Image (cartoon, rainbow, N blue to C red):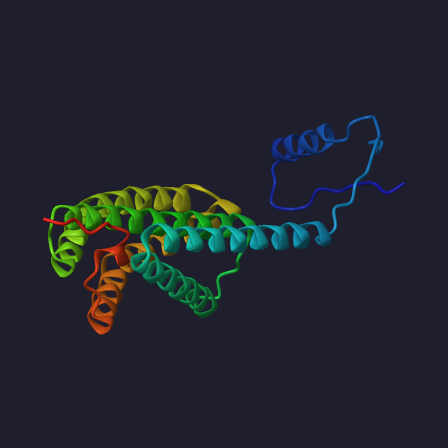
Length: 220
């Protein structure tokens, strides 16, 4: 048997302490494997496919509901969500961000926030239309009245995402990054893109009937 030797610039007392420390790890028993499992990459790939498919189905259902409930504004939201998804993918490609399952969860959550922002705006818009305002004025007032709620919601979510990123590790960071990017995109989509597209589309199509905004015309 080989005899271990401790070399280095040690005193006799330091060498003895080091030898005792090494010997303390030599426990008098062997590890026996009771069971063994192997999880291959196929399971992860299947989970990723199922998650993406579920997200796409949910997005299609949401777009259909937006169009049915809000008519023209719902169509604008559907168009904006498609643009949002494209920009999101381009940012991930440009920044070389690996999309993980928690990252997809962050994307889905940010899309939900974008939809919520659209609903808040459109409900304010319809309130103005019901009060007898013109379509152009209602659009401006709807976005103006919804701004503070969307801003506050986005800020609180951004703070949460930042905390998760700096405190979390591994997959939690992936979720936080996707959520961070998604919230910023959804905010600008709701405040700027939706308003821009909706106003120009209304003008281009010369929409004057409130039914295009799912509001019944009132005869006075």
